[in-house]
Length: 594
Image (cartoon, rainbow, N blue to C red; front, top):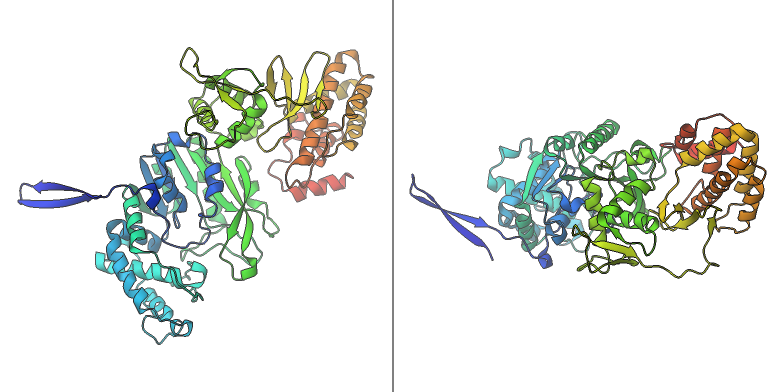
């Protein structure tokens, strides 16, 4: 159904027909109308899973490198994100922005011009590649290159529709759908070899037109987003990827390209937007064969960096396409991460309100102070953390219309708290004493493994019904203090004895070994020595179990070596490895013989 409104121009006695397009139903969702290098349709599930937990509270969405717009269209058509009232897309590629503007204005006109090109396209590959045949690939490419656009408003609607139709045609018929121009702005991608060429239908373009009615379109640098963004904004960045092979270079989506300096400018912008309390997410290339393969991770190490596998369709060699490493950089926790944290921090059976869980999360979160700093949340009373927890609770199976069962042991009470908050708890699990590994100290303190942000091997200290995740700097500080009493070399030797026993599987024989070691310690140190030696052992088991780990327990030994033998402070030893590439750390370990 299309809604029509009549507006009356009283002075000129004219009636104007205004058409308001309804938002499409979820069965007819708008989809990207262009192929695009690094397009995110295949990666959408990974992106959606990692969205900040309180993104649904945001009012504004900005995408500074819009490309084909896979994330944009998904957010536009998803019922989950109806709170988003304002959408902005930005790109420096004038031809791309021209496509969005022309389709937003008149999709039918664009399609009528595209249809002419489709009908005139020769049937055989030989004819399509023949430069002398009117309507061939190289004929259309030559016409496109003869009319390079320099300003958005230089073309009238009819000419603009022709231009955009040519762009879509070339995008769908060129090699791998690659968009690439030379320094003069000329499209220089060769013809693709397709048995059947796929063009967007008129219906597809009209669905895009309807979706774009809520979107403000901007031509310009990615830095333009800074003036548009506020604390209620979620921004997704998908810049040209840093090369993942020795022969690759930054992609040429415009004649000016995108280089190392642009990437550094992007980092500075990312940091400023974080300070502005915006919610941020960025995709980029992961490890891929260059000498400085951890460059992006090192540059953005103060933020949360997740590695994902993506299907890369564009490559000059067919056998080089497939799953590659990509990273997602973000500055806030997702629902899944909050659930994972709280599953480890909550004491089974104990009742919590959402606000109590928020405090539990902030006080016991498994992040170092450096990792916590970029999070756009202020502290245990932060409204944002409270919202994040409430959104995560909605993932419970007991909550109406829950989106998943990732929190399968969470249950919600029928009655709410006095202030109307939900009360929830974890079901107690019957775990055999033979199946679990934990250390119980004489003062009833427990040291145990639990569900953490990444896996089941996070270490917690439980005391008087509360759990906390110990930090490196805590037990390094204790080792430093112990070394002043019994000597650094002795503490280091005892640590190495524990280190040698560490494997991927917890070994219960370590308990009497640790008790024997600390039995010779001064009386005032014995209890804490047993506690922190046990924590050290269990954290090293955790590190051995990290997925795709390159360093494992060696990382902890290096920190203890720097602390006790080289004389580093607890804070220096705990944070020395941050931002460094694993090969650099491994070479230092090998230098010391481990």
